Image 1 (cartoon, rainbow, N blue to C red):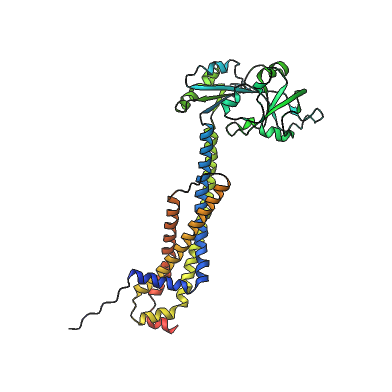
Image 2: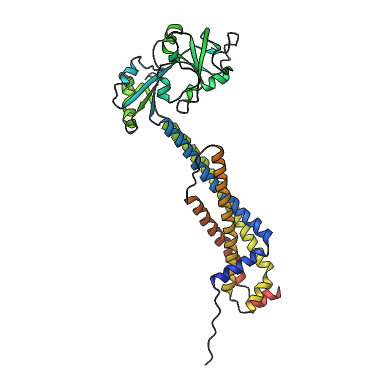
Length: 396
């Protein structure tokens, strides 16, 4: 009885060697095709990495400043008019057990100018605020130059400028004068930037007593700042409105920095979705490029396919070879894209002084996506090559 012949099997190493040989024969085409995959993976990894790094930098900055800052400001009355906070609101807030620091500012009607000759309309959107002596510790900011208002005599015509206000007024150092409320005020200091209270950056601040005696201040604060125990922030927030204005708690607007941060992060999430979509499109284009390369490779190598089939290679052997070429091509692009994305994240984070934060799932997911693209892009060309008969392939 004649022994039944069984087709030879290709070992995994043989399949890899055949696939790599096919790619090495056309290096320029391989590089150009893999570049499409690399661009898509690099774009997606850079989006994820830069987003995570920027958030890590923001969290680090907020951790240094503290996220337990609450603010209370007047809202509107039931008739739609502007409400006001009572002058004794600071004393009442201090009675909350979990509150550690309380301070306030009040917006004045006065305007500040570089000198008395500047037109009234050109005030540069700089607000004039009456400030409590303990404002800087409450906000966690300091003086960039000069000194704070507590170092001057109460009631003296002195002013401290926020970082933005100093730039708009053209004041570079303390010691000069500005025209404020129809009289000269001496500039005694300039503040550092205030991330948690950006309204301070574009303000000129005068002492509470000075505002009362020289600028007609009535004693009603317009913003109350509080620092609370981290674990009790939400509890303090719930009672802050009623404490600031017991007669009309509905006329008090209570906010905290996390609200602004949540809005900013929602915007970041929308932008990240858009950029990830662009990365996915780039990845799809790269997959189409791989598929196109493999289809052309099958057409160009029909003679090779026919010779292999004539020498005993099965359709499955040919399918394995071309599918392996597609996988190797996509994987090479994925590895290159992951490296580029990681380098871009690290370089940009270093330039912006952010901690480098690239989630491990990002490169793993990117490489998994490249394998999927390689399989999908190479499946049709591989099946097409496997269906070629020896005579059909050799005849072309």
